[in-house]
Image (cartoon, helix red, strand yellow):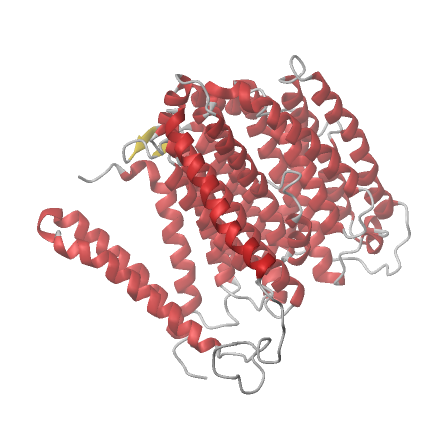
Length: 476
Length: 118
């Protein structure tokens, strides 16, 4: 009767933590809530520890509805670390721009819980539950600066587009359910492997790709993301770009590599074209951007395209590449957005031209920005290079054209990334007062930079972990 | 297998023709004589007084949301109560946890002033 709950201790801990933070916010009077951010950050680290402690305990719950394997655990660690860094990087922002509200941390924790559920769900309903928990939390977080029209506008856009993409996704899921008669993803895989694909199934697959394409902001479903990234509070933009995307990739991989593996010939080319278009458009549109958040938004669209490349071959190496890239992408993106967020705290500007002379005003911030951007561009010896290497290695054999597109567009991306670096290092600052970096922000920045450098120079251990995680994924 | 779905497809086509047909026929055949009466907000209803874009108090929505919490709670409590004997202690504890979460929600709403009529 009582299911074995030991496997979902991290999820239970997150739910309790979210409620605890909410209660603390009620009990502790406004104005003395500064410790809440530290509490949330340390607790998130603690939950990461719980996931690590249960690393070798795999299994499934509730009749295979919920799977705990190394694949999902790796993603959970990624989400938790991202949440940890975002909370650390946003304490100042919350106090200054969001009125120090405790709900911020609580909802952020619930969004992370939704992502964790997504990465473990082996059933369409559970997956959708996690997805909605994450999306609704994000809708609230996006319009958290509720006195600013821009924030509210982006929140409204997010409501509409999230609703629409969820509808498309659900329609696709219902078609797949109609054909296979089951909502359990691994069962769907078994049934589809034995049967010739129907045209109706293809319609379902296209709708799944479209619905999830919205979530990972792949072109042509990307229109929402720059607007929303620009309007949302910057730390939330970072979390949206990292967490929401990585979680959507987790379910994308589970649905396609486990559920649709038998018919992979039918969707490989579709994903390859989607990846190619995403890489091209994301990188080209990033070039003329003048706002740092919009630039990072388009660059993160391009990054989604690179990650999508790993899915094209539906192989263990591809999944390994996705896991590795998702992990390093978290640190590079959180680093870049934390710089943007802190810069906004101090100067109130998001324009790239105001970053002039940042190297003189705050060497650490400028260095982190450059390292993060060069890593995203894939310059060795940074982590992005290794990640792209793993991803593109899998497609050289069958999709050489896609590898070429990825390579050329990576070179294009160097141009706009270096343009920011030039502004920061070459131009003289208009206002040369140094920018003080507070302790939690320093921790975030240093961790982001250190991990990005470390993974680039010595990717071995993490590569082995993701390889095992990808392998565990192909066993069932 | 395919013929089953073929029937669904035919049904879909018929539905499209049927619904689009009505709109198109109306569009083609209907006379267009606009009068002042016809362009009012509710042609057959009571004439509106004053501007129609009035703002409602958000308190209405807050009450509606709070009502929803307890509404959903009842939905879950009812089957649980019916099957209480056979479900045992575990379900009882689960329900207590569920109620506890809802009560935190209510506490939060209360504290944030959602129950005050401003």
